[in-house]
Amino acid sequence: MAYTLKAHIPGLVARVMVQVGDQVEAGQELAVINCMKTEMSCQTEKAGTVRGILVAEWDEMEEGSPMIILDD
Image: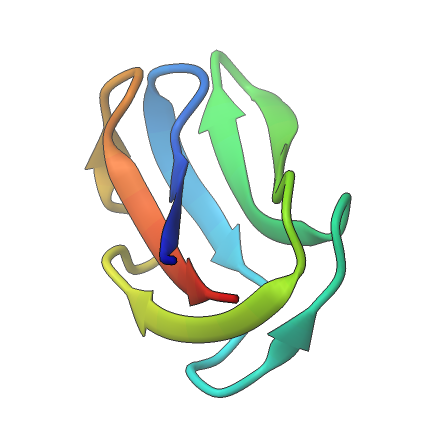
């Protein structure tokens, strides 16, 4: 089953830390959002393989916007 990491705050994507095909562990930082000059880590709740990256650096995010898709 796929898991989608969603933005937990509005802001700009400062960095994407993974690439398609990467294996990730629960709690790993996948991306960073810049909100009001503060960098906020976006971490996955589940382990898996990165299937898709839906964002790029400097994309504007709203709370709940999908960012990265993982496969189990």
